[in-house]
Length: 342
Image (cartoon, rainbow, N blue to C red; front, side):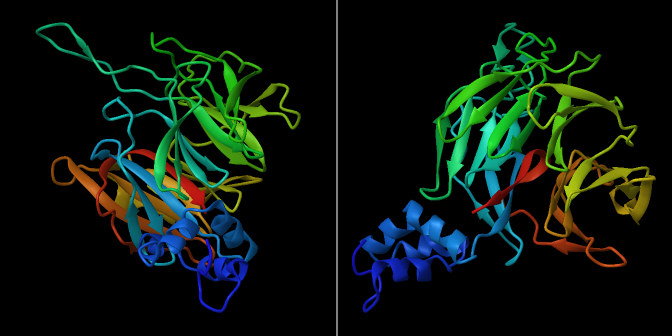
């Protein structure tokens, strides 16, 4: 990487390139071979952190088309399409999706078992232990070390830069209470203490107050990983059932036609969501001061696959809705949705 910008030392030139937003990187690398090398260098992303130009983006995967992810840039209201995830499992679903160390991780999951009524053959994989990461430096997917346990419909969170997975179902459809942790620097999984057995282990994970919370579908029981990571603590939160998102460390739930905010004295109505009355299987996620409702199915006119993106701005006295640019390639049931900082 010599002579990136005439008259400037390369370390200064790198800091200049670091200020260019991520969506323009494919164009930057067309300038010259040295710029191409710079764009694909980890030094560029280190410089982005140093100069304060890191970007907070959203990563989304929907039912259609299969195994395709898009990244949303909220500052520019545009969508970037990633290469297709190269899993052999068609319509990968029920997986964990998180980001850490500047990469997007897609973990486990599987495909709902389909049995051919004529031959009896089962199509696809019911549960998987595979792990993929998308590296924005080289803009490619790559396989990572497999999980210790094949699982789907499990909790998945990032704790201190490491990925924690817990619970879910195995290939046989049986519940598992095993938990494990992934170190992205060493590319290894290690076993963790098991969850407490509960009636239903279809679960999801959320970070609240810097702690991993495992929520079990249909139950008020929540399992919280203690600060030492040595055991799970059972708590009865009695939260409303429905889509959940964390915005600025506050919990928001969509239920009974409203967005509710969890406060010390209980749930408080924040805003009406009557517009989503017949919209299902969408993603709800927080980014900055905003809450995003993405994709899903609409039942107003049959079963319509949606690419819509609705945004609730919460950092004001009266939260307001507005529409962002719709997904350009993805639509329908949201399979995975997470934040990515690069």
